[in-house]
Image (tube, rainbow, N blue to C red):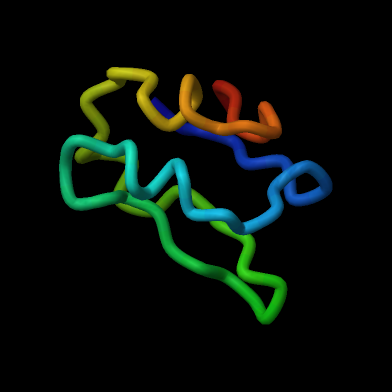
Length: 61
């Protein structure tokens, strides 16, 4: 699964990375502490990141 993170909605809170059951396939991308999905091939498609995001910034890409 390829996840899309809407940088306009992402606040960089890190909730998605904390919710991920594997070593989070996310990384901080800039000085605004926004997140992007990395290592998408390791994703188990559990939707924990999607469900946990308080801003609704993560969707299927």
